[in-house]
Image (cartoon, rainbow, N blue to C red; front, side, top):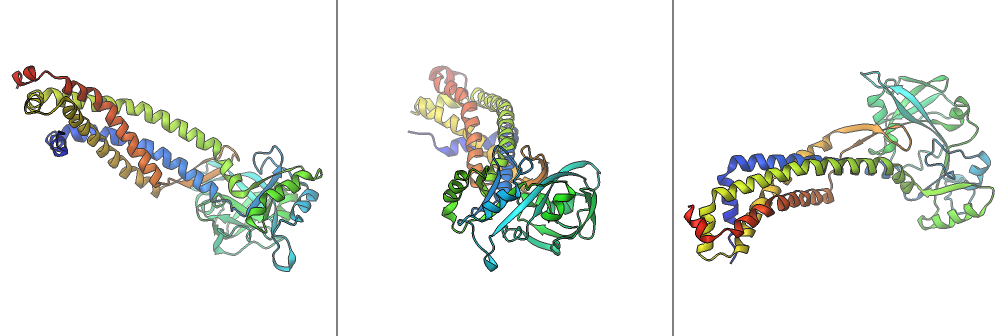
Length: 388
């Protein structure tokens, strides 16, 4: 016959101070663990949302990013002329030949310089990104020294607001609009006219070509056609996959760092839980003897003490997750290791992270409570009653 769960809960309430202290230690560990997972999820979400499933990115073979790529004008023309590319108004292909360059801009308030991506887009550039919408000002005029800035750029960098000017490429550019890209990576970019920006940066080739598929399932056909043409030495990826790959290096680092820190901190939390449970066993020796004397088996006693440890861990896990959830209110920025440009993104809590974090806390409780529970189960009934 099992010991009622209310017995375990009542004992935790009786030892309120030690319960709070032990659960608090576990909560801090779960907070760190969940925060790192949320950071990684936020990074992936930001970059994956940057791309559209129906869009295809063409860059030079072997180039990991647009900054490193070079696409000749003849190659770009061949890509956008493929039959798998969707046509817009007037029968013109839905394609944007783009130039991507890194520049350095000072941050507002601190003056600290950081890398920013400047994207020269074609006239179809905005139409290919339905998630991008102007929230202030207007779109830049082709052929004019005008740019529009992502919301993150406008908020964090000097000269990024409407009516302000940015200096790069040997000239000054007037910011005429601010766009919101739905918290995607485009929010951390500055856009302008590709044909005007290329001579300013002394470039004769594009960085990439973005095309919209006529049908979503024609990607393989387009890729095969490009690979079969010896004149086009380009690599094609769906835009969502392309941007997901951009997060791979930083995401791997965050996960390794987070797991390492969580394991180190969890050792302390497990030791704390173990000490708490050993103390509980020592203080309740007579109680354990009584339970055994009235007919409860060793396994029932062991499960009761394990339940206490697991309840303790669950409490710590819930508190840690509640604390971690407030991190979603903050936006942080860091350098994307693939593009070397600053990227702003937010923490993101998902149901999978909630489940994973709670399982992590329960594992800590199980490991920390197993030995004390086993000791309670092995107690001799006579000696336990004698010590009461």
